Length: 186
Length: 267
Image (cartoon, rainbow over all chains, first blue to last red; front, side, top):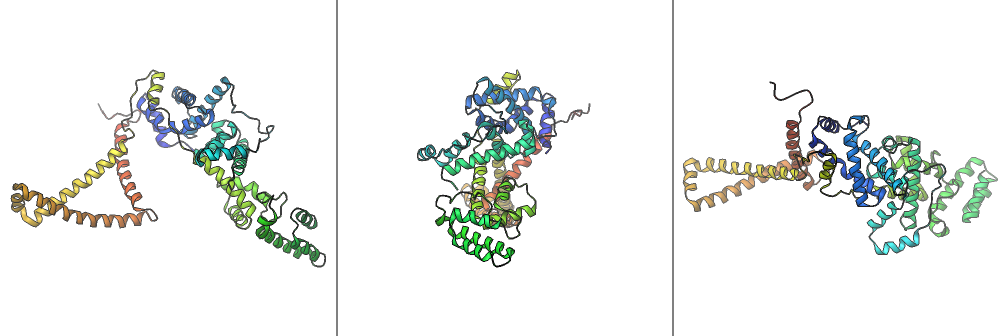
């Protein structure tokens, strides 16, 4: 899916030195990109720092933007790489995974989820379930279902082959489905 | 093959209908056995799953026991198709096969429900916002002067309010025209000279205008309802205002943007 015409105009204006256009561009996409980063790093302060780095890198590399893909996909790609760097530096969760070697961890979380259900609302519980999916799977889930990217766009944003996107999505849904099942849904 | 499947099913679920079918199968043609077996298994699944399978009620059968009438899809095949079905990547024929199967197979219905719920739970996650001064921080990090947008977030509300004000201004003009046409210019002037009469005349004109506007609104509503069948009134009104706001904003952006290599100043 090629870039939106309005985005191409915005990028051109930025390249022409119109900083107000970059402000418009940030206003347009900061929520989507911030939501993805926050779901990956799980800390608002860290997410905002990564978002800031993402937009700074985007501004400095606008000339290399390829309008073959939507601008948002390109921003997700930068956000993905910046998040990987951050997670590596902090030795926390990693966004890379060997899909062939890593079996899915389908641990039964029913007892803890039942306890949580009593304490929190359904919405919070579901949010927590999504957050408990391993990061590489969670990322493709969010890109597909929340941001509504196509398989091809996800492959571009996460820089993995399309086949791997499909495998990860399948496993991600399987993990989340199992968690929902364990919590008594369905 | 059929005996093996039947045996498996008997072992797992202890269904007598299946056993009868197997006994019959020894004496009649194998095709009719397969058909009756399928029917009996489907019936068994549909009627007895909650009673006879207390421990496996929610589990997908480990082997394929259900095939749709056109024999195009079984449970295992369906499970592989479900992700593409959810992502709307199947062609019409495949969608039909999946729907047919889901209509008849409760195991797969449940499987589909869970997959769809997983997708919906992610789609329903709220979009989050960074801090309000985020943009200025980025500009400061880039060493650029922060210039807020010409059309900030509240501009669409302002445009809507402006549209509303314009509508009422139009109504007031109509009222004035109506008063002049009914009373004449001199009489209207006399009325306007007397402050008390102004209020009376204004009230009268406003009531009349209200009726006219009501008629106009009714007509506009009928037209809008025809244009947006299935939508409700608040949405239609909102759409009208948003469209007006959009036109104003687009016009503003067109005026503001100067394509590269051109200038409004021909000199």
